[in-house]
Length: 149
Ligand SMILES: CC(C)(COP(=O)(O)OP(=O)(O)OC[C@H]1O[C@@H](n2cnc3c(N)ncnc32)[C@H](O)[C@@H]1OP(=O)(O)O)[C@@H](O)C(=O)NCCC(=O)NCCS
Image 1: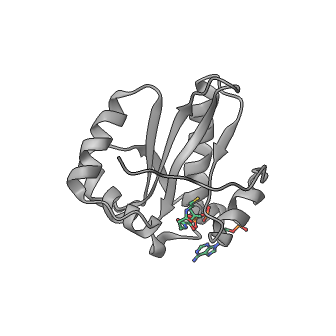
Image 2: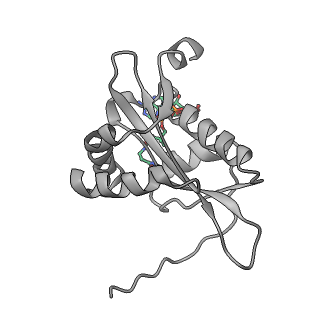
């Protein structure tokens, strides 16, 4: 596994990654067009409260991405949140997901944050096992509500 992990590198996302990030968003279940991802990415890259990292294989292909941000609320200590994490189907099981998660955790520590929070759809059983093996514990089950304006 360690040898396989060495083949994947992690770096900050760039605007030029937008189309691949959009493709991978589709695999995460959030189909988004390239222009929309590019527009959002441009704003996120300017913000010190957000970080987007990509996992890259030696030939330069982007295998996956993670977005983390500072979750600021009045009632509890500020923490990092994982907004999204996905590794392309053909690249899974090579340590890219773990490397991305570790990078996001390091970013959070550098920001002075002491915990990382994430929400994961109940149907994503493999992802739950992945997180739990990496020190994340399930703290609650909740409904998500949305109102279209
Ligand atoms: C969850 C996810 C990000 C993990 O990425 P990854 O690059 O496969 O992660 P890693 O290689 O670091 O670890 C994956 C684990 O699955 C195992 N695995 C082996 N082959 C695998 C494969 N083909 N596909 C998936 N996992 C595999 C790994 O050995 C490892 O096991 P471990 O947890 O016992 O160490 C990825 O599976 C994914 O994108 N899933 C779909 C989207 C998703 O659910 N995202 C999370 C939203 S909350």
